[in-house]
Amino acid sequence: MGLDNYRTVLDNPPFRLAAGNTAHFLAVCIPLLMSLSFFAALLLSAGAARAEKTGSMGGSRIYTLFRTTLVLPMTVPAASMVLVWRIFLCPEGVLNQLLTRVSGQNWDIDWAFSSRAFPVLIVTYLWKHMGYAMVLWLAGLGAIPRELYEAAKMDGAGAAASLLFITLPGLRGSFGLVGTVVLVNAFRVYREAYLLAGSYPDSSIYLLPHLFAHWFLQLDIQKMTAAAVLLVVSFLTPVLLVQGLKFIFRYCERGNRNYFP
Image (cartoon, rainbow, N blue to C red; front, side, top):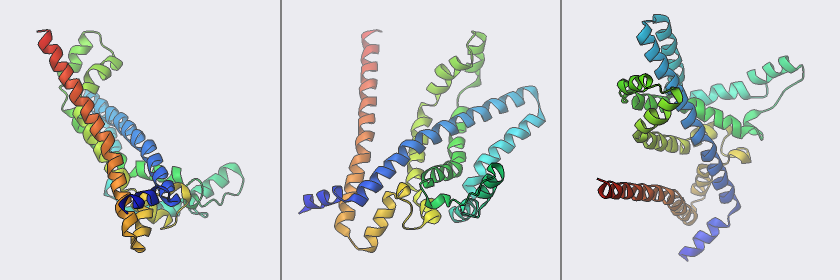
């Protein structure tokens, strides 16, 4: 009886669609957000250090403004943010009017309810959460001693070598924290998807929370619990594999140190 629930869920076309879209969204957004926020943090950190060294008040204000611009979307409620996006992306919205003036052709695409809804959701997610991830990266960069960079510069190391041998090893702890926060926020994108396109969005942004909401309204508890167990197992498996590999690497490294005193 219990295994039949898992077979029913796995054979369910809406579950396959929602699981595939969710995996697609995670595979695209998590690397994008982590890399973009990381390079934004590098830019801000280098600019702030340069402005502090030269004593340039103008440069410091520019980087402060840039940082505030990226962090500001964090303070905007999701409902207000999506309302602005809908005004911008509706058939009579700002984007279509701009494209009509530039191209000379009539644009009346409803970006949130078409095949272009997936890129729209990605941009919405990146715009909302990039500032928070950047702040976490900045905290990790601030913990790296500046003396290491100065010593590397005196030894002739360039920017690429400093990034590879100082910055990245110094951010090993931050990678796990930022990755966890980004993953959690990626599952919370259902708020934006629901407010943007409702309970029945375009098939490209039909995510697992949409499916769970429909099953909850139908009180289909068997499917919900079976799907929840499958999701927990699918996400715990890579985490356990990564932790196991880290343990093996640490054990091998410790063994090499004992073997080569």
